Length: 433
Image 1 (cartoon, rainbow, N blue to C red):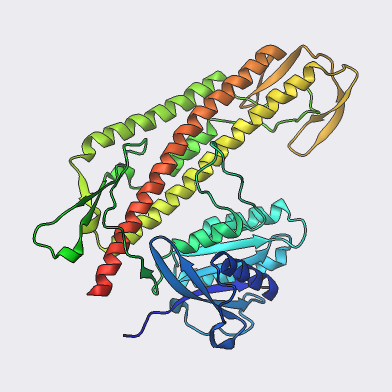
Image 2 (cartoon, helix red, strand yellow; image 1 turned 180 degrees about the vertical axis):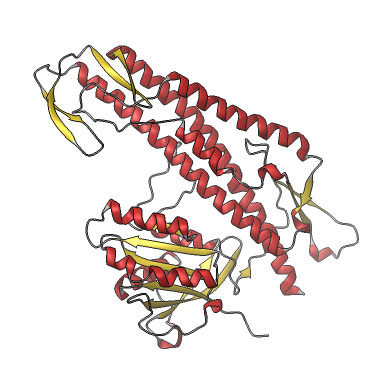
């Protein structure tokens, strides 16, 4: 039986940029000593390894010009299993050289992993990045900024969230490669996750099955409640939660009296929305015990579809988490600006923000009272002390909600691991058969 060959297609207008991305991926995988396939400089091997599987993937790099490969692809589109497009975010032409061809490829073969990887040879512009992100949303690509570094892990960060080239490798690890060889599972594994705000219960129980051969060990039985209301994260719901926080641009330490903030009515509305989500999850959990499906009973196609849905939900939840953390940071900066304002000289000249990018010079007329931006175009005059208390309430409120959302994200990650474990078992059984 001929072994399956997995191939990754890397496209980009600059050969050096393509090779840089490939080299970094191989370094992360420990493949620096691997020999190129067929002695071709544009084809190399990427040895992917996870705790579930290992897979040798041929990486085919092609230079793009005017939305066409400079050299013809060596294989048909269906013979590749993932697509990585490499562009220079500081040069608009770099993206325009290949975006139509990339769109054509995914229209023919919608790969599970499609990445637009953006580095920069100089200072990238927000306009270019926004255009690329918009294109990615419309064409089911994930945008990865190579210049974003992995932050130091802290209690406030999402566990194991990757950025830059490490995020590229993480996405490739999530693909179901044809060449994958499963790592033997532990026979004594026993993992149970408790209930979460997402009403997801993943129960992995190792039990002996009478009549089985002794070398088969214990059978993993993974169960997951199925509820139609919980099959996908409600995108509009998440957007509503974030829109409840209408944060104005912070003026910084050199700004005049106006500070970032929302009114208490917005805070109540946001809390109500979160409470409704929690109540909905509890109701779903009540009926979940009567509506369970054994993951082992699902075919690989359905498990792969479930994995893709979980990946999308994790991406959405992580983006929401980032939005809440950004809002919390802005309130903290506003509190710091208030503290500096109390010690400011009335004759000191400051920059007053008219828009997010336009400032005019001005002078402080009062350092005892400030106008607090409460969102939707309204301002409330408060003393510096009360304004500081307002900011503290906001920070505390957002912290409680980020903690809840982080728990949901961890639950989704556990759910993803359970699905991958079952897929691993099924693929091992298929290989033995």
